[in-house]
Amino acid sequence: GESVGLHLPTLSVQEGDNSIINCAYSNSASDYFIWYKQESGKGPQFIIDIRSNMDKRQGQRVTVLLNKTVKHLSLQIAATQPGDSAVYFCAEQGDSSYKLIFGSGTRLLVRP
Amino acid sequence: NAGVMQNPRHLVRRRGQEARLRCSPMKGHSHVYWYRQLPEEGLKFMVYLQKENIIDESGMPKERFSAEFPKEGPSILRIQQVVRGDSAAYFCASSPREDGETQYFGPGTRLLVL
Image (cartoon, rainbow over all chains, first blue to last red):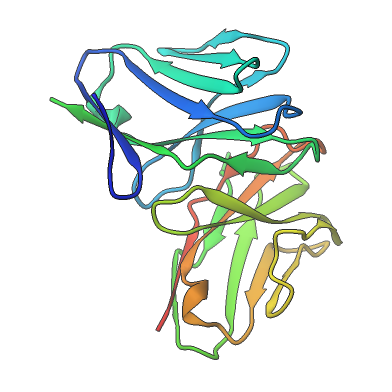
């Protein structure tokens, strides 16, 4: 289940289950969205992106869903693996067109 | 095909010293972005540079911080007279596109001010 920790909300899932990480974005004018994965001590790693003219985009084991009506973005990870354990950030590109605005992040813990 | 490179990876400075952080973008990328990350928080935009030009420095503190991206060599983020509040991870990203899409991040420099 999902819980709010001291700082980052944490999602704990069993290995092999599907994970859903949610993000609320702030700017209704944003037209480009990205999910990043950040492992401890490393830089953000690009996972998948989506433009505002799409509702859904699929990659390898990952799917991003965009609901512009409620300004909500989600990342679905199928068959979650221990290597998926990390902090996940959504980022939106606002009307300035190049500046990425990051969400606060969700920590994903995968139980073996 | 090397990714974005940053050095040093870790930097310790005493209050009042200067910190210089370097970023070499991916080959063929002429757009560089600097972000700062405090523990348990998301990244915050600081500055966007193209070769020899600062395009947007709206996220940079007005004093003590400066950035450059010379015609030759890496991009430099310089922090003068560091204070403890400057302790953070500083990430550089590069992109081949002017619209800033597809930003690839380096491993970051973790600055600790004693």
